[in-house]
Length: 179
Ligand code: ADP
Image 1 (cartoon, rainbow, N blue to C red):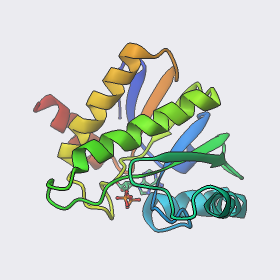
Image 2 (cartoon, helix red, strand yellow):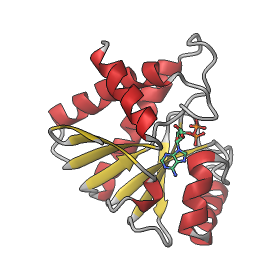
Image 3 (tube, rainbow, N blue to C red):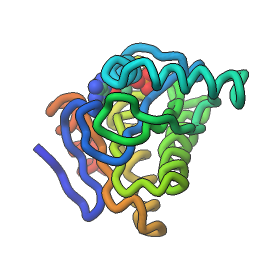
Image 4 (cartoon, rainbow, N blue to C red):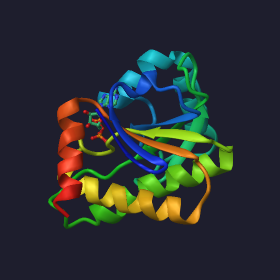
């Protein structure tokens, strides 16, 4: 099942298999790996991604990557060329600026993609796993950011949202139609 809207596409699948220029990692601030999609990306990509993340920590980010920011590494054994690591907010009920921080994670990933000259990019549903952001609330934030981006910028030509299951893709589509 896929859902298209011009340059934006929502699909279900495993982001590590995506044949795009860049995939986005829902990392944590340490950049040193974690569970969920972060663990899957490091597992499939191999140790070179972690080695680059360690170097970034030492040379540029001694305190880690702040929530909402993004940074790029190579992609090791993955079929894409770049991994853009970003940190989404942990959900605390909506009172701690979560919406802005989630939007920033997508916006700054797209800014990094433009700097890299990326033509196609795939995003996971940042923060909606271990970090607990309600998927229906995240859907609206993400969709607004992406629509705003394609309105103003010509690249990336193709932007994919990759949901891990058909059920989570269906929930995303429902959340948007309920707006
Ligand atoms: P966060 O800590 O930002 O919540 P998670 O990795 O726990 O990050 O979850 C983010 C989303 O990524 C969840 O919806 C989860 O189901 C999904 N996910 C986990 N593994 C993959 C994968 N290999 N491909 C695509 N999405 C994935």
